[in-house]
Image (cartoon, rainbow, N blue to C red; front, side, top):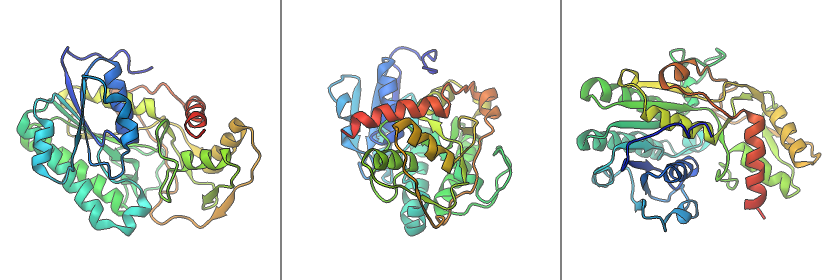
Length: 325
């Protein structure tokens, strides 16, 4: 794995917010596997207890059920912590259009609470999840930091605001913050259920169960699908990054571009099925094309993703075949 060369001092303590979620639980698992002490903060509103249940028997793991909208909860969770990996957020562009006030409360105020708690408690590094959605209506490809368009969803606006707070907390208070703009992350533990489920796990489950998936739009939208282990690497490398790189946001993708219809065809081929998809209307707020320029993350974080789509999807399918038995 690409992050096995990353080392931290003995007795290092990590806080993973949203640690019962898809990305958060994978971060917890990786850190525990490296021998570190991990604290998980999650209110289980979108995360799943089953994602962290295997860790509860470990002495190095502590689960704190709490809401990042409460500043005192954040401060208590951060006490004695060296590094914060802030993954707690409400995801999904379509859902944010339906519930903009909730997204403001959780994704903006909640993240700000975590930054403030980290500042007060003297955390070494604050690494937080941003999103490729901040590029909005920009048609430039590949997507490059500093060439953003207008955001086109409340979700994207919350992440753009988080990045501005990250910049200010570095400039005004000296807190080393690193924003990671995730590009369509997929892999083990990503929820395949619900109307807001991400496309890859949703399609895998439908195809395994003999159902016909629906592609929103014409299928010619493109995405930079990024395997979960690349994201784990990015978080850990940000923790080790130079302070001069703090206050910035970084594209975290695989550096590739795949049309949805081609992704779908590859899924069918890997699963050994031949099912023609249905096509539905495009989703409001969705970016048409997405492809990450990862040169900034390579240079300043040392990020070097090890998994391309083909490698990642093989591992993901193997996991879902077992999970969905």
